[in-house]
Length: 388
Image (cartoon, rainbow, N blue to C red; front, side, top):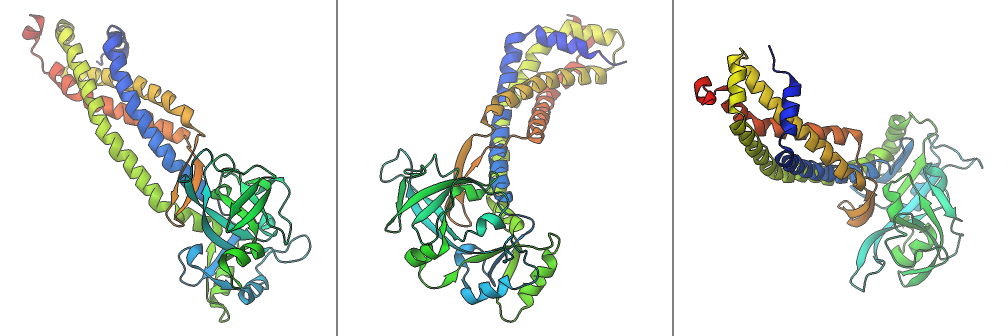
């Protein structure tokens, strides 16, 4: 026969102060655990959302990033002639040749040392059609003009970013004519302008770093990749755009997840010892009750499981508290360096239901570990000694 769980719940309520402090300690560990994983989750999600599953990103053969790639103008024309490329409403290929530069911009509210690397992407107006998730506030930049569009996450973080402001870089003033959102992707951390303008003042030459095009058949990536990479006129690699950007997040995302586990593992030691002390104190004050339970015929393993359940209940409430502490950070925007481009990428903490469930499970595991040895002591307690 098992000891009713209500017995443990009532026992917990008899020690509100020590129980509350133990639950709070566990809750703080859970909050840090969720926050660190939400950071990694937000970064990974921002890059995973950047590309489209029906878009192809073409770079020079062997290039591992847009920064190290170079594609000639003649190659762009060849790529646009492939039958795998979708056509726009005007009957022309949905192809966007792009330049990719990283430059320093002045942070908002900072002095001259408050600079950060930002991606300056030269695009054609086709880029707004090729990428389906772009929403513009204002108007697109005009051809032949020093005009730019800013991603939404650029606007609150840097100076002179309102529509109509002049943003200075590359020795020229650029007029901000629009802001754009891109479903929370890393494009929102970029500055976009006409590719021809950026080429003339920043890179020189007549080449691009990448070409992105929309597939005519969303399921035709494999065929398009074989055709592009097998064409002797081209020396290129073709990537599914969504996978290319998702792969960029793997290294830093894995490191952030590793740090989350390491930091919270160290912190959890203190929380486990808190649970140990609470349960030892509880058992010390309830030895007569334990003796009665054993006398009534409850087996030692039932006593062990009962006190483990009690510790788990305390930890469960601590886990719920930790989830409540961590919830407000959901959607909070922060930034880090994208190691693939050495540029700053802004993204939002992402607390998901799966993370909250993981936090509660982590809390219960800490409670069980902390309650095991006190529970074992209680189950092995001699009845005569306990009655005294």
